[in-house]
Image (cartoon, rainbow, N blue to C red; front, side, top):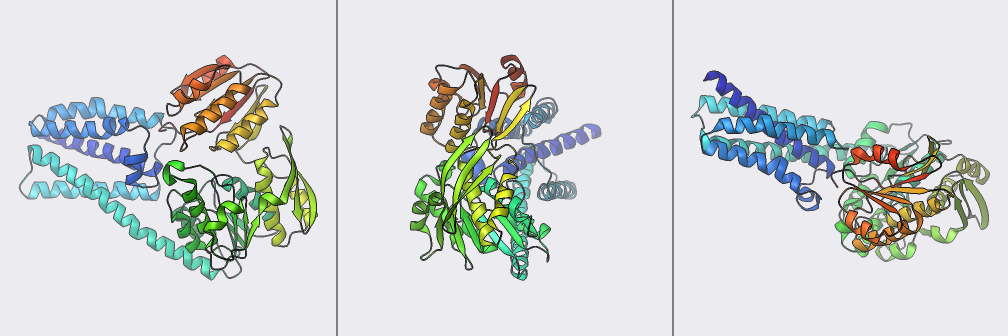
Length: 493
């Protein structure tokens, strides 16, 4: 009996840990927003399979005093299913310090629970099950509260550091799309003359930027380039209050993240929050007419779209002209995409504002390296690859399709369609796919029906499990084909 009691205890701890793993994975995906997990997750059945079902079996088994049923379920069904689910995720849980703290909280509370349950009146049956449920809710709540307090300390430390670096120029970039590309182009140019640091990869949240400041800026830093993203009104205002940028870029604003903001006006208003900086010297906007109604009065806005002309973009590169000091200057780059002419122009004008000579900027623009997974041209096994898997907006994806159409051979597209967008945009995307491609591989379930219904010409392959993608490509492509990877939604979409 004693051994059975220990076995029951082990399975209970395993069960609670499994719930914690599932919840923390989703919290990490959705920036630790419980609201977004409950309202924005595209595969709600996962909540039933990996959370509600185990919880229901646990409570009912103990309510009817049949813990052996729960032990069997936990060991034979719940944990194997959770392990398989975790292995299949292309965005598995990353054990960051925050995640580690949660599991330490969980372990400490479990130990405390067992001590109290042993020393005081032992819980049995339904009371034991409900006790564990309350314990899990308590741990989750305590963890979220603790992290909230800790984040305030992180933010204050970052704000103090920014204020202490008197010679630091802060540049902030926002927009519906083009943020990361503009940031990387600007960093490549400025780092040749300044001690410049850019927020890493796609880090664009308040806490991500604060963490970057605390870890990577020091007394030698001369330029800091931050990317500002948002899911709600006020998100960018918080970032602006933290870093108070001297220079700002508002890249193209469109219907990206429409499911969060509801209207284009809300998106424009949120992006304009970046201009509410006390020390703003200049702001470069792709579309001033969209931003100006929401910008602070007398904001120093420069309209990028009016300063770029004669854009030529092929599979070999891009050329364009930019107006600098009243003269149209010609630029060439290996970077693909018409829209990147505007992103690079923003970087050019900021570099000029900071004192770089025009001829030097021209050389640096020519030497710009393409950004990984953003219209990145590769050749693999005598097949041409356009890796645009990090591009999730309609305009960008249509440009990828236009570039693919320039290829003379067979053309294959791999795409989940547009995420965080609407049916009309996905239909427009599908119609262009239908005009250009010989094979269309639609990944995931979110947009597969919408896109497939619009495809008449290409061979259609609907692929729910991306693990099979490599085999599908080997079977359907030949030497000389062009393959466009357009967007790459994670499999929880």
